[in-house]
Image 1: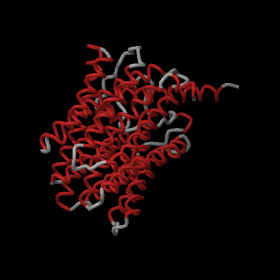
Image 2: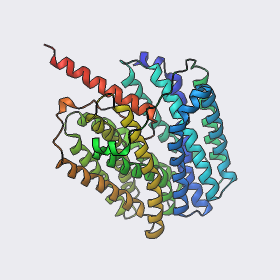
Image 3: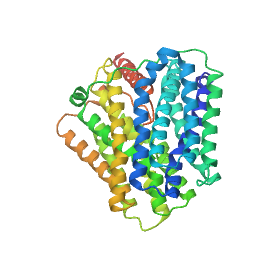
Image 4: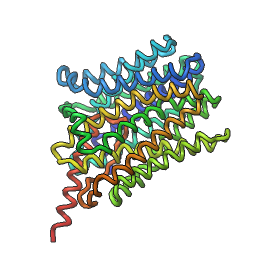
Length: 421
């Protein structure tokens, strides 16, 4: 493992710092928005702006890289993102925040594409699985650590926004000072929705609904905490639990996915998510009930994302996987844009606990659709499925494609080993 990390340590350190800054601003939006008196619907629009920018950045960054190169794109996007973070406390209006979030989302997506291109190029076929897994762990730890940093300042001032900007700014130093090779940043054209639905209805519909879930959790979790009167420290802990659950449950779900029908696992994970949302919905004010609900709801969301990718790849040839990965990322992004808007409207109409109502309903829809699909197609034999690899919903198409290709190659190698005498 040390030999694997020796070539990518600078990238991983940089990613941790980026996630510290980006993770801070996600929660800060909810905290500061509450202080400024923004409604749930207004903060929902602000949240959707981030995912709209993120989706745009994923598609446009490869073109930018081909024109001016990795280093210039990386440095430019980092500068704009750092400036955008500082501007939030200067322009405390919903429309201004929506524009800034769109900018930050675009820059963050472009940073992912650039960094993941370097990371993928630095890995070999033998080390790619370990490198990608370590990268995902570094991302998650950065987001969790960001919640701890939020307790060191007052969201009512500009201090925490400045801190997030500083973290993003210094994150580029280890990357730009150590990376010299400039790999190609090629992203396959997304598979058309009709083909994607025909090849894997459950993967396509499921990942769209999961985009709703993920964006609601990460973008509206702090808004929910603010509206029910949690302190800043409690809100930070609540958001941290959403991602801590993913860190803990990713491995056991991945282990099971290579041993049971993935549709059953999707149903089970979604059912657990729905049950945890019911725990949050019927919470009688107990803080730890709320934290347990966040841990379980967030804990199944990230594994479900990887499950949908793996399940879709099971039905495809190796040549179609890159295009399908791009289509799934696009579908997820559309769901992520729409999810907060629906949640914000529901919270405005019903109250803050509609946060759990929307999440629970969406998890139920995933579970029920998985059950339905089990009646429409026979189970794919376990020996014909692709290997599972943890991929975060924040990953760009570059990492998703690399993970899918690696998983297919690993599965093919294992099948060849099994057929040899």
